[in-house]
Image (cartoon, rainbow, N blue to C red):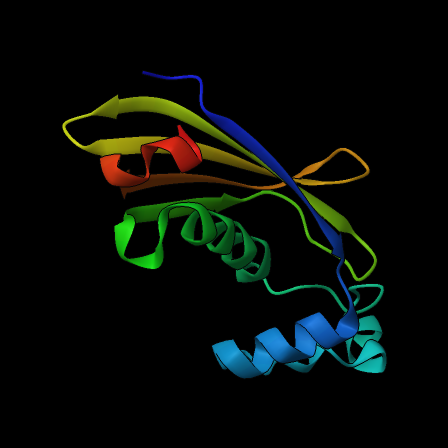
Amino acid sequence: MTGWTRTVTLPAVTRTDLVRYAGASGDLNPIHHDDDYAKAAGAGGVFAMGMYPVGVAARVIADVFGHDSIRQFRARFEQRVWPGDRLVIDVRQVDRADGVRRLELDIWRAEGSRAARCWASVIDDTEKEDTHA
């Protein structure tokens, strides 16, 4: 069965989000929180870590299916995410077989460019079927 979809629109990314993510991930590169440093490096300003949009997409999957159900998750980065960007995460089920759902996720910046693309495999919990069928 394919066809299950979900779209989640997140609040605008803030510098506080980036600092919190930096602390949680250990990525303390000042290019992600210090404007002067980022501009001196030619970036035009601070921007999110590449894993930030992927992390929030993984959180969407975990919120729906549960952390323990995720068996595989991979990503391809395409565009930088900047403070003020609103991320839209489109999730599509592309296959469901042998107790596993395969999902594709597109992470869009609200202005229209794709920030990242992800693929996930999750255990299909038939007891929770009604909540995410």
